[in-house]
Length: 540
Image (cartoon, helix red, strand yellow):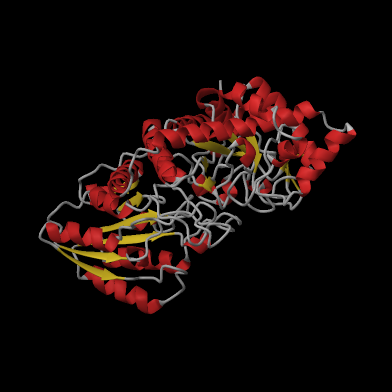
């Protein structure tokens, strides 16, 4: 019915109006056709929180609306619980409705081909089955609320270096067995409202002009019924893109590409039926969005919703934590832990989400220092704190290490918060190595030598090296655990919750051990996936 209504509306549009629907009106809004009552929906970055731009920055990096920051995909996948992903998706859908967002730009379902990819925190797994299970459940959860999703980045976008220009060369078997199944699962099982094409070329063709990828495979074999849009600025040739199935270019082209589309129709280079189909898919999105807004109009969402979602974020963080080591059953520490030394700058400035377009303006943020102090003192103990490192950069500072050693040696147990600061991993660049900051490695080794009852808690979006692993009895991987991660950490360390998560990716002993290493970010123009199927655990 929606498709038929959309086609009826498109039949009333002029050529210019139809062409205008094929690009955005602004950075986050689609075009409106006021004479027909069509109001362009708003789309927003995700996927672990709604980043609704309030207008102070067209990128939405500053001045975005407060929202719940849930654990990132790297964290959530470690729960191995797709139902949990669906619950998080439902909560995100509700927040989208409350913020007037029609499509959440996520989830990211690209495969973690190599641990140094800077955006791995935003992806689920190196395993296509696991990634597909989570993608399908996440999409189903969000869309159950009448809000669309946009699975991304289609396809074979597995590094940040030269992501806008690189030509990834992947044989069809590897594509179908490794890099495409997660997209296929989401499409065939949950029908996302939109799919977002990647910046890169695939086997010589831009993903935004790839007829086999978009028409033959996505729409033909998989039966995708929704709208195919570009990543922001990913269009190369707008008319070729339209022929290859790209319905919507984002953001606005300021009318330039609209005119090119119209001119191509007038000249006969582009059949008007192709434009009509694209316009109808865009209008279908408008109609779905309008229906969801009308259903939501009578609901009031505010502090009560945020409280529920904060509790869900806490649960998700706890269920996703992975206990990497626990010699002598040091954990849980228990309520009567005596004097506990908490060490690490992340105690006051936690690393709880990734950097780049997914960064969320959390409506609240729990600090580990507060949460752990409450847990220790609630059990009759005492907590002492030492920074150990500056959380923004973790530059070398022997005085901070000495202070931490003194605090740990005078305590009954020590908790060290370590991981990767924002500047070490982000969208836009890949990591150059797997090491923690040198200050953190030195800190952990020194504290462990002074305090044998030592727990290391990691906050990172991708695998790291642990040269000190043999010298510490307990290691807890929490990844990027969202705004309620500190409360979840207290639950985990003191026995209120069990760290039952499992790794969704391989932690290699060295980056060079990965089969893809010699062909990861190694050429600025053309990259051959010579490792084939040997991705992650399949190689080891």
